[in-house]
Length: 179
Length: 423
Image 1 (tube, rainbow over the protein chains, first blue to last red):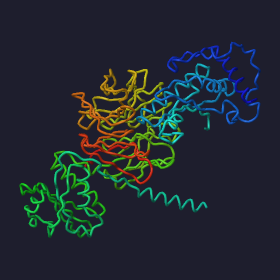
Image 2 (image 1 turned 90 degrees about the vertical axis):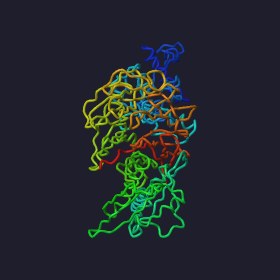
Image 3 (image 1 turned 90 degrees about the horizontal axis):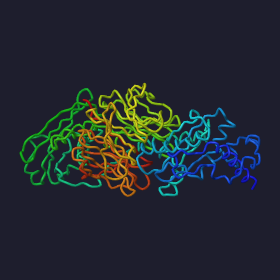
Image 4 (image 1 turned 30 degrees about the horizontal axis):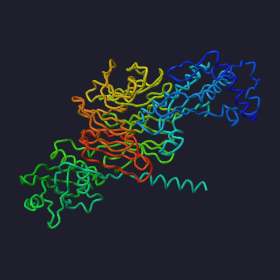
């Protein structure tokens, strides 16, 4: 419960930060609403102060209870639209990049399911990675700190040949140095 | 324990080296030339029966039907022993005889003759003096001569193919004879290897390596085993395609944002951007005359095939049927393009005739990819998914003959057919 509260609080705080510059990137997600709309009208003052993640102890990137432990954004078939449900995840990483790890350079790796041509999938995976990057740059992370690459269909997380596996393989992963 | 693992490793490696592709014809249609291939005199004392290689090559092409010599004794190996009536009675149109004679220096002389049965005439006669270790290769050369004399097209039995074998997390780039024999690993990695492409002279392979945790274009010299990273720019570096003169590569790079097509020296250096779209431009392929580059682009909303002048410039769309047409490969005569098309969730190899815009779907798989023409343009090698595994398959460019290449273990993917030997 405490963890959930922490996650929500962090997300709200991050959203508050983000609200200075509403996300309007149409190439990323046509249907997306600006993140600020997701807030319940509260201002930053309503949000309980949250200690920075690294003061809780340990590396927040490795803390399974930290929102930063989640690194994967999943996509629909043939799509590079970042779905609303991943806004908080991306926001948490953007905030970590801008507030805590100001010198970290990350890689975003796009992935595809096995359907289609390898090289075209490589390009589609890169476009997924670009879509996540675009959200992060809008949230204040400098362009030069993010390299987008792709594994295409070459590194499936799930090895099956059905939709349940494919859904896990249509993905962009946020990778920090050394990962 | 450590030692056991080492032994296990050696054992696995030995198995891997032995594992080879086996060709099977799955469908053949159209007329087949009935041909009788006699055992060569003296070949039973050699490490390799040359006539078996010749017969297997011709049979595998789907254009020949082997005629049984049952009842004929002795089997002819000299012209004087040939009774054309025997072969007319068996409906053979062509006959191959030969003999192998050891030479004083340890090499052997392989002599073969090809006859037209109906005309009772000799069509070809060649002799090769080779080391006994070269007898398979000699069989392929003989099959090439026979194929060309009887079909009018160049034989491709002496060519090489390359492909990627994936076993678990291990990737190997292998080079093998066109019949799947003599497979050799030229590169092994724990990261993916994709998109191998032969230089026009067959001396080098360009491919995409993920050893640096991202796709990077590498050129490997096969004789020397040396590798050189050609393109390692920010983001993705992929889809290498050789220009016909072997001097430059077209590649797909993301250094300026989304995937675009660039051209650069095959030795590396600064890439020159050829496409300027806001979408994905990738999978470049040079036309055999070097004038054009065909490529995949989704600039119009769905991925389609376009072509542009090889130095860059305005592109014209050349595929119009369906919503997914990708991965173009020019036929060696430049008149058609093989590519991957999606139709109702199935991905198949199609052939577009450029002059008429006529499209023929050649394959029947569910996830076919990576078409590659044989250098005579008659066969297209490609990757198919069979039982959840990647396997190689081949189809004649008229769609009549289908072959499957099966491998004992692992996925086999991303094939590329090498050029004709230069000798």
